[in-house]
Image (tube, rainbow, N blue to C red):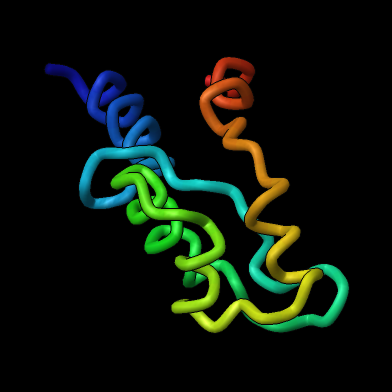
Length: 88
């Protein structure tokens, strides 16, 4: 493998976390109240995939304000769509 291929592969891996999945683009803070919320996204997503109710998950995570809850409920995972247009 030549240097150019190694560089290309390392650039592809920059957008992925250690598990190999692409990272989610979610606001770091709530856009209304300014509370940090991004660190809760992975837990929310994992528990939601297991079939838990969003209300229960957000209550457990301490998301009590409507504005913070709306960030999670209204978020659409578009990273795969955006990645198609990445410059090489």
